[in-house]
Length: 257
Image 1 (cartoon, helix red, strand yellow):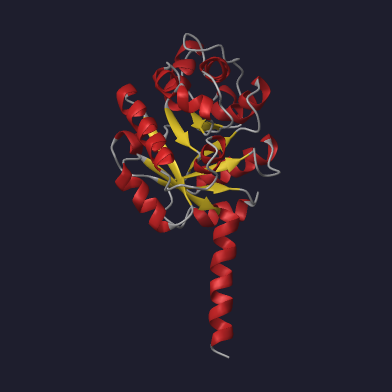
Image 2 (tube, rainbow, N blue to C red):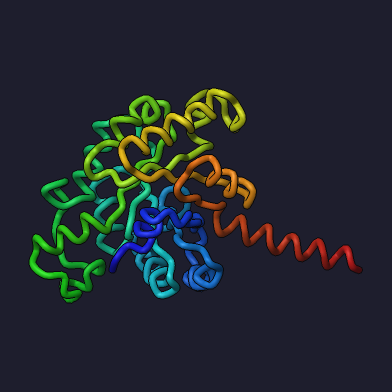
């Protein structure tokens, strides 16, 4: 399956996504009716594991959403399992160094870029998708699978030019909360040092011809992110949006009584 998010990013379509924590295939199907472009199934901060991710990925695909997954950790099994069940891209948290990213690329990309283990799986309909020979299949997934390290630590920020330029890295995802915490200014997003860090990350991605995605918790923040120069935006998470929506309606009902 071609990666629709990759094409939208390449064509400057300003895709909007959402983190997904609730593990509900029904809610995933609902999100497919909202106009969102992609979802990030969170294996780091939610109880979701690879088996549940497979069900959510299927629901996303059938609903017209590009399914990305955030890995639980930067180990080979954590990377391979999510790719083999069909994740079209991986968000990699807690990155601190160039060597760490090189190791992640080796897990996630087939040769000659990396050393990803080859096995027919759900991602290619267990070898029945008609992708061709083994080298042709590897080339297809190297091109269509997005590897996206997060810049959310001072270590990643200091090495961002080299990280963004690595072969096998497709883009960078900026985690504002953890980045600000790592910088010693937790939640101070208007701080000049934090704003300078965002410029540094965006510029590194531009020089490397890679995309850059940012997170915002409000519609205004999403619009501001695009104006700032980010290529894609992740808006909030499914549980938070559900709570906000229902609470707003309950408050409206009670105000009318």
